[in-house]
Image (cartoon, rainbow, N blue to C red; front, side, top):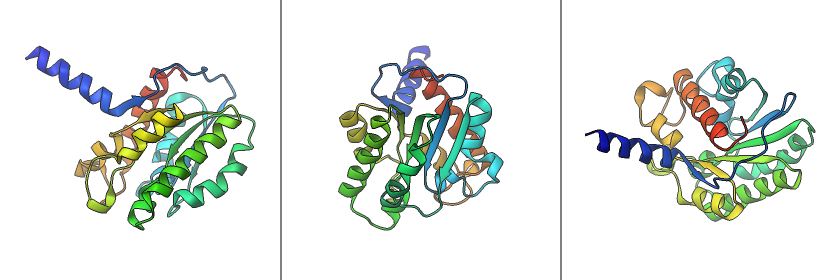
Length: 202
């Protein structure tokens, strides 16, 4: 039984944290984290102080910019990203896009291209990137799209996979079909902190 439980825990951790395993430069005092995305980053369905970037700021001790915008597609996020990356204190970016692309039936090939371009923009400025996978909302499924694994592998960045799927699979952790509630965002922030620690940023 202990062996079975241990195996399950290892599988869960593998699902949540995958992608490139090498350690990143540790964040220093004064370094800023940029959380960029759509309503899942903005914190729709919960008060501002319970959004995952707000909770992440309290847990990490670093300034976290909430650059989430309700309704944004990856194309719209890509357009506003250059100005966000101009902040010289930003040393890492948490990228979470795709929900609106899926709901609006945008091209998944274009979503992949947009994610890669955003990662490349950040890397060109020496900013580390943590990619967060989004479930396939179009089928109300709870499995992340394979393209996130592909992007993480091709761009050699760490990936948090399965986190949102697990949260949105629990009715007590969501405010509607596609958004967490305050408890869900708290878990999201806690798991991201674990990922940042695993990859050497914290």
